[in-house]
Length: 93
Image (cartoon, rainbow, N blue to C red; front, side, top):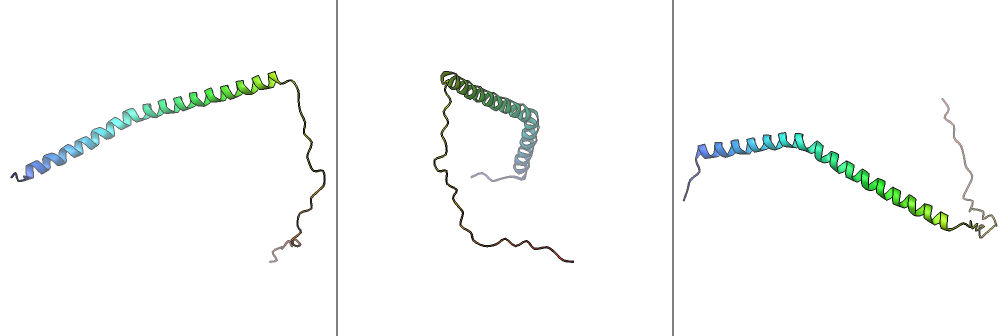
């Protein structure tokens, strides 16, 4: 059975600290580039979807030359249930 030594512990601790700082440095370099690519891709997808929906609506309006108007079904005014009177309070100094 092997026993742990103080030198091995220090070596492991230094490796962990070095890995942390290397990862932090690389993240500062590459994370902005990665995020920029993701935002550009999302923007392109949004523009493409918008263009497709605009093209579809344009094609549907061009194929249908008639405009239909449907009047409201009920022309009677429905009175809402009256609950009570409105009281406006003013602050007096």
